[in-house]
Image 1 (spheres, helix red, strand yellow):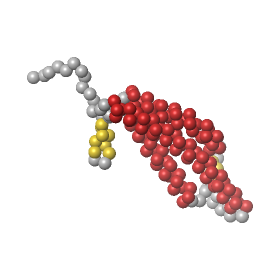
Image 2: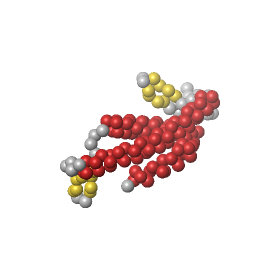
Image 3: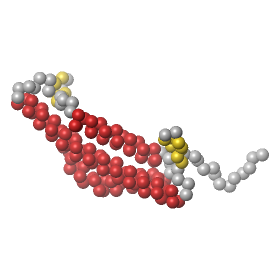
Image 4: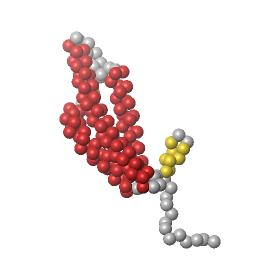
Length: 154
């Protein structure tokens, strides 16, 4: 026998993490805490992008100084390659630059995809939390990263 329910069924949205299932918050207190955590994650994501742009500026300056130092010493073999109209400046592998850069990218991609998954729960409140986190993070850190972004483009 089929029974009629006046309310539509609630969709079950799950996240798989370490063989455990976590569901979207079930009461208002969990929802408010989740909202705040998502806003903080959005702010931290913007802060991470700002710190990375500042570090990239410093690393690019160090790389250019290393290239110029090698050219002045006459050791410019393999440093600048010309081909097809492109000029490539070869910067040697440096652990103190390339490892943190890779960790920044790993963390940025992970945080960005996590925020995307939250937005894809199709929960309007959580989507607004993602937007608020990006807004507040940009408001707090945007003026710092704008200063360094121009130097990264060219």
